Image 1 (cartoon, helix red, strand yellow):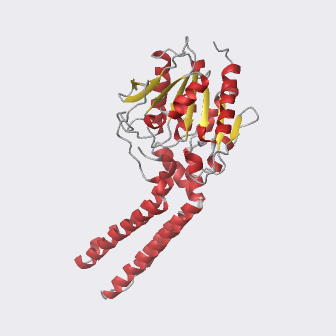
Image 2 (image 1 turned 45 degrees about the vertical axis):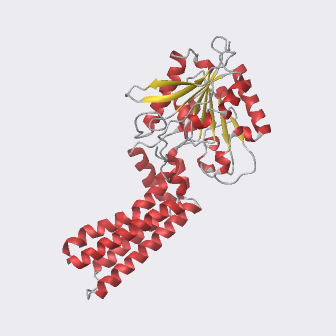
Image 3 (image 1 turned 120 degrees about the vertical axis):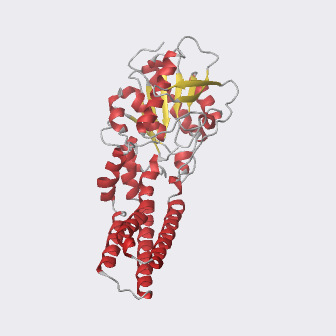
Length: 378
């Protein structure tokens, strides 16, 4: 599954230098002797490999992760198949509370990216559901675990989430007021988009929009470092190209200087958050990977939404967090997590029960929402 939270920005670096080089070569190559053409192509190979070095060393979190193997579910969990309207079949797991009477409640869990339901359905979801005296329903997005299909945009993920919510109601017999939609990271973006008005929705260390994540990433030290490395590679490649031409007895033409200027300009653009706002965001929307979560969040009843964030989160930048987005007011319940000692990505990845006191306070808030929602619960 593609990693939309990081790839949007780091992927642009990967393509920048080779794209500029190919543009120049498309003009120069037809006019060059075979020996020089071979030299150019070898340079292209070197610069492409160097770009991949940046991809994996500077932007490791953006590496696409495919989780295509279905794992084993814990004891007492049942495997279910959820059919989406476009023909995709989602792999789902369901644990029914043995004390269930009538509708009761069910936690519908929306995974983070590169996570399978099998990774969370054990200790975490069992403890979560038992603490609230609820059942639990988890699933894999299309292309993950045993689910078929491949996501081509956020609309596919939203379709998946909507199908699971509908399944909980029509096949498992839960009323919308009995649903607790808990989304972590990427799942925290999907859950508000599909939450019925009477359900509880929880955003766990998630974003206000994927576009905001991309823009924030392009202003980060990590991205600027990648842009600097890309600029250095462009300069080194350009100089070696010019030296090679001179070595072969050719003059450095105006076209070559112009080519170097274009490459330098392209690289410089990647260090600017303005580039993210005016190029990356429209590109994400055009390719189907835009997602405005804040709008859906604010349309949900205020007493039934809970947002969690960690100030040291190394995956979701603080200025892109849903919890701190414009429009959220006093009616919103926003919880600042402290968690166990952590830094960077570990502040995003730790399981909530690993901070016992924080976990107990979280459960109290959810129980309170179950009791005091706008619709009286059975």
